[in-house]
Amino acid sequence: MVPYFSMPQRILHWLMAALILFNLLFTDAMETAGRLMFGGQTLTPEQVSAANIHAYVGITVLLLAVVRLCLRFVQGAPPEPEQEPPFLRVVARISHWAFYALFFVMPFAGIGAYYFGNKTAAFAHAGPLKLLMWALIVAHIAGALVHQFYWKTDVLKRMTSGR
Image (cartoon, rainbow, N blue to C red; front, side, top):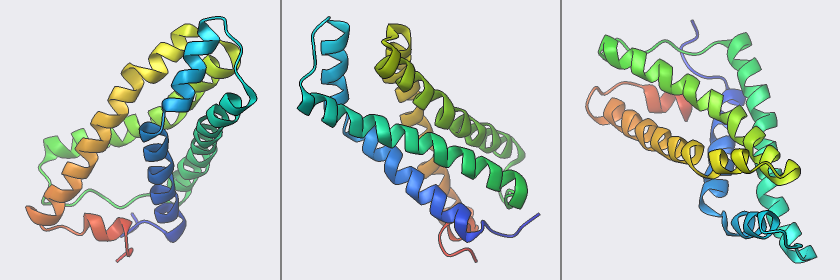
């Protein structure tokens, strides 16, 4: 087991976090495009360009997720701190793998909705998957803060400075 995440792993973590937050926060252009597309209307070139930003960011997340998953299998990940109760270690492991699943499922649902006009994919992408992503992000941040201030572990340092 490695004691901390490698520099490429840390860069990918924070880059993906920024891209995912961008797409979660700035959805207006894609929502407008979806409403028009599914309503049978034609998008203007400006609307297509604006929606494409969301799509390209999502596709970038998908590609970075492939690299990140490969790095995780090759380089490994640090073990859970001993201060963390066993039950919460299991919860943390499940939530991390749920993140990885969403890194793939959300972009594919978005591709299905935007490029193939699949309404079910659009509903899943903008509804339950988005909600689950927000819930995981909140739990992830709360877990990191509990590690830092309650259990006083090095979890934050392993994903920032690597020490």
